Amino acid sequence: MNQEHLYQEIEIFSKETHGSSDYFKETIFVKGSEQNHYAPLKYLCKKCEDIEGRDNLIKDGFVCDALDLYDQPEFIKWYEHQFARKLKRSEAKKIMIIYRPDNKSIFDAIEQVNKSYEILRDQHIILNNKNLPVQLGEWYAKCIFGLEQKKSTSQRGFDFLLEGKRVEIKVEWGDASSPKGVKVRKSLADLSDYTIIMYIARNFRIREICFLDSDFILRKFGGKGHTIFLKDSDVTQYFFSSSMKHSNKVANSSALLRFATPQLAMKISEAFAS
Image 1 (spheres, one colour):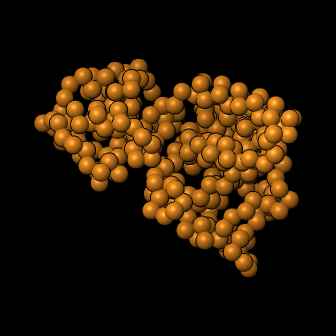
Image 2 (cartoon, helix red, strand yellow; image 1 turned 90 degrees about the horizontal axis):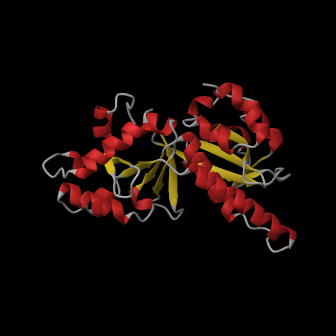
């Protein structure tokens, strides 16, 4: 994809107002190289021959977020200027923003965090804090599988969606899995279509991924009680390093290879060779 041409078209769109058009009805916008540059995906599909839709951008390294997931006042200001109308709350909830993350800065930050965590662990300051790994693992999954992230109507905060189907993401942090296995609540598995387990190494790289149908988990491992523990021995055959059954679900293979540990990247690189 010609990213320079894409950003040029976004800049061209943003330089003029479009109050007389019906682009204000669009729900997917692409962010340009500048903070106040956006354009509707529908418009860009007309102007850029190599863009047929959202999937092309995701495959090229872009990610998709709901507008109301984060505070993005610059988009609201841009929207209201472009279309000479207020952006209603009910309309804002439907809008998705596609943007290209600064992967170099993110990768450099991860390297710095890893060094900081090593010092804090050595000094016995951090003993059991999984908040950062969990959020990072969810972000990895969002980028790799092109997931949409939206605020949830429940108390869980937000939901992940893949082609309209709900995804439950579980993050296991450490160079080895817990002997008890990855904890999955039956109620959440029952509410989701897919369950993705992201195994994040202590250096914050992806050491393994397991993509499962939630119905399969409930059927095979359900048993009694409200909780399911998926041990490595139960799901190792479904690891990406062992099986590429769900490789077609990967929307951004470059992100997968970039953030994987060298060991995992070597095992799966051939399957994603372009």
